[in-house]
Picture (tube, rainbow, N blue to C red):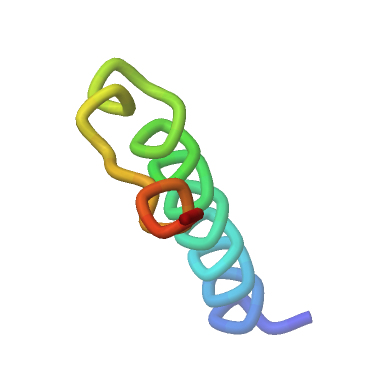
Length: 44
């Protein structure tokens, strides 16, 4: 396997993993109480 292919694979994998972790942190972290739920607002 070429070094550039290995580097690209590791970089893309780390980027996707960090983006997923940050999204989970935003969704369930300390600021989650300020998020609004549009489906809950329009249940009537």
